[in-house]
Length: 113
Image (cartoon, rainbow, N blue to C red; front, side):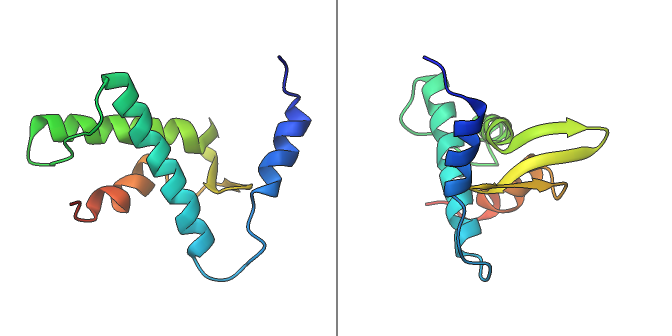
C-alpha cells in the first residue's frame, strides 16, 4: 500500500491547533510524542514499565533511550546546524532546542511517580 507524501502532508496539517495563544496545544503535542517515545522503548525492551531513576544505571540508560526515540519522532532533518523538527502537531519548526534537550529539560526533569 502506498501513502502519497501530499496526503501525509495534508493530514499532518489538519492536526495543527487553530489557537495561536497559550501553551496547551504545545503541551498536548509534547505529551503525545513523549508517550510514543516511552512506548517505543518499552516495546524494544519487551517490558511494560521502565526504571527512570537517574541515580541508577538502568534508569540513566532508559532515559537516554527515550531521548533517542523522541529525537527520531520529532527531528525531520539536520543540515549544517539547521534543525527542522516537530514541536507542535501539524507544524514544522526551523531551529529551536534540539529534541534531546527538549525532552530532558521538560519530561525527564519533572518528578515522576
